[in-house]
Image (cartoon, rainbow, N blue to C red; front, side):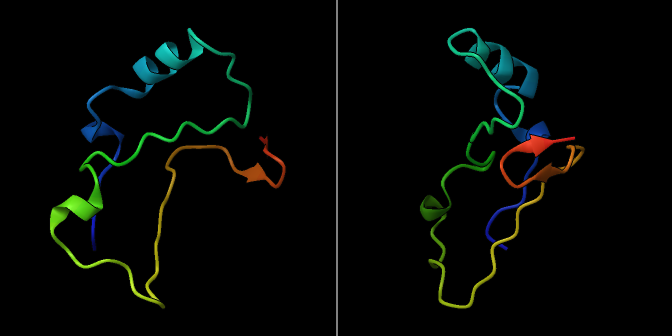
Length: 73
């Protein structure tokens, strides 16, 4: 495993990020805010790069399922 983290480990909380971003633009349902990972850049962690066949898994906890096209329940 290269990294394991969640929003509790982020420098700024989710509500603060949403407030800051929405002060400069309108957020719409289905918008994605890409924040990076709480642990920082994986390449700087002195580990090997991905190889063909490696699996990358990411989960979003406590979110509504979204259909293709960004339609969320």
